[in-house]
Image (cartoon, rainbow, N blue to C red; front, side, top):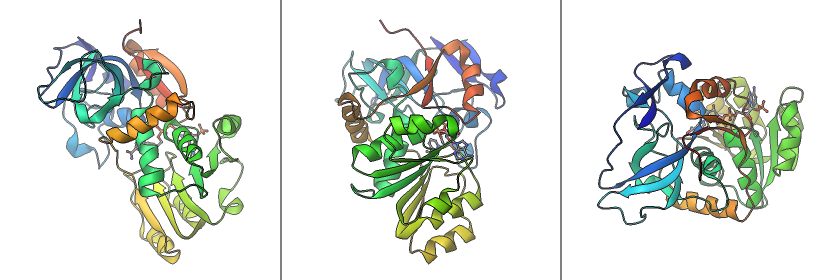
Length: 323
Ligand SMILES: NC(=O)c1ccc[n+]([C@@H]2O[C@H](COP(=O)([O-])OP(=O)(O)OC[C@H]3O[C@@H](n4cnc5c(N)ncnc54)[C@H](OP(=O)(O)O)[C@@H]3O)[C@@H](O)[C@H]2O)c1
C-alpha cells in the first residue's frame, strides 16, 4: 500500500511517498481502508522532531497522520463494536508511528466511532482530533454550562471553530477572537461577539468570563496573563498548548482570582464524545469546515500551509476518491 513516511526529522522535503506492507490488525484493533486524513499542526511539529512533551514517544520510520476517516476492512479477534464495511472516524495511535497518511491503517477500535452519516469522508477526517480537543477543553476541563460565557482565543482555526460551535450548541454565550478576514466567518458559525485580535485589546473589552479557552498557537506569557485577567473570581483558564507550562507569574495571577489553570492533553479514547459529536453534525447543529483538500501526494504543500497557523477550519489529505 502507499503511505507517506519519514525516516528522519526535518522540513517538508523529508516526507516520502512509499510502498509499504499493509498492516495487520492486533486483537483489539480495526484495519481501516483510509479515505482521508486531516492535517494538524502536530503533524509538522512531529515531522520536525517534536516538542519536550512528544519527543520521548517518537520512533522512526513513521507514517504521520492522526485523524482518519474510512471503512472498516478487517476487525481484530476481540473487537465487538465494529464490523467490516462500517464507515468510521477517529484518531489512530497518537503519537504512534503508523498513522493515517496511508491507504490502510490499523488502530485501536476504542479510538474510533461511526462517522456522521451526513458528511463525506473528507469532511469526517477533519473532525476527530480537533473536535475532541475542543470538547475536552470546554466541558471536561472548563466545566462550561448553559448560560455561562466563554472567550475563545484563536476561534477560527481547526480547534477554535469547533469550540465556538460546541459551546453554542450547549447554550453558552460565545466571544471569539480572529484576524480581520475571519470576523464574518466567526459570526456565521455562531459567535455572539467577535474580536479582532490584531486591532482590539480583548483584555480591555471583556471581564468576568466563566471560562477562557486559549485555542491559539501563541506561546506567550503576557498573552496568557491577559487571558487570566478577564476571568471571573473562580473562573477557569484552559490552554491548548500543553508544551507551554504555566509560569510562576501566571500561577500567582490565577491564585489571586481563585481561578484554575488547565493544560490540555490530547484526548484519544472518548468514543462516546465522538458519537455525540457525530449526532450534533447530523442534526445540523455543528458545521464541518474545510479550507482545502490536497491529494496525498501533495502532503508537503499541505504542511507548508498548516505551518502558517492561519488555516480556516482544516486542511485535508484525500487518500482515495469516494465512490
Ligand atoms: N493539546 C493538544 O492536544 C492539541 C491538539 C490540537 C492542537 N493543539 C494546538 O492548538 C493550537 C491551534 O491548533 P489548530 O489546529 O486550531 O491550528 P490552526 O487551524 O492553524 O488555527 C490557528 C488559529 O489561531 C489563530 N491565530 C494565529 N495567530 C494568532 C495570534 N497571534 N493571536 C490569536 N490567534 C491567532 C488563527 O486565527 P486567524 O487565522 O483568524 O488569524 C487560527 O484561527 C496549536 O498551537 C496546536 O499545536 C494542541
